[in-house]
Image (cartoon, rainbow, N blue to C red):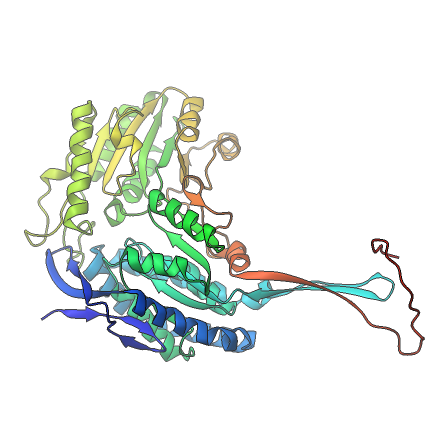
Length: 500
């Protein structure tokens, strides 16, 4: 008997009427543990209708009352985050410590949203012209949609919905069908926190649910995170429907190591950032760029550390868990085969892993390639798995050219002991998020997350000030009130108004 993971609208679960479902599996065992409802048109209308019905009242709720609910959600999440982490491990496969870290990073955005009154302030200018004042304000959009990926079923939605809700919007979340239970868990937590029914809703499903969300006229904005082809599709279709869009796409993140760097530190960080969450992170390091004569030493240090990693069930204290599905595991393994066939040297072969877990789990161990060339598929493709490729270059300029010629521009890291080199690197690279001796430069919640080039479609990054501006729109009011002690003077004046 498997569990049915439902939709959420009007403050309650409902199964839907489409009759379509999808399997939810435990990646560590390969067993089907649940069924997730797939929305049809009627289900989508019900969920979006719930958000639409609640939008006006929530927008007119005081900022103080809204942030009190967000703060209560923060307190409940902090008390029960282990529950959410366990759900993530059971459906995604990442180890428990990594799942808990995901929840904690999402909670930072919840905490940021508690302080949103400061960022919703407008401006005021008195007497801009004789008897004329001007003030500005920021107001919510209405219903907003969030389409989130499988790799962070809690953190990525929390990049968006705390800010959207605190700003006065209502939300429809469309989670990944691969690990959907976290979405319903968070919906129930919002209800316990006192959020009015209809402010947070969940629409489960596949492409039909996505299209229904981005086509519905009541949905004013779409936030998306996923692969670049789908991000481009969501951006173009949503934009054509007149919606505001932020669509975060794929990545190919480089980590450049200069000859003066601490190689032990660099090796530790490359392994941690390359294989954490089985490489299923948009900010994972997938290309290690060795500059100058350090290649042999750096590869040896990375290989030694890679061989110590334990792959297995995320509940058993392993370092790295399985991949999310068998199909994805097989796809990543095919890239390993292609890289070997193309002439890259397989230093550590994850296909030979002996996991601590069930035989039918979706296992692929950490894989390390050396002497990778930019034309090889292991370099050109976003593999999204535990595959780290070493590219050797002779100079700093070659490293920068490699990065800037890549179609992605999500994250990049530089390891060096030279402050001047670091400063030059910050100026030279065409990438949205940069780490200096930091391998995964995910900004804190009060900064904004987002890349350049094919890693972002739209003009706005996630959370931080840009997130607040994305989920609100500005008004500017110009007003004139006559002095009651002075008789107003009238008269016609057809010339363009000038300040006097």
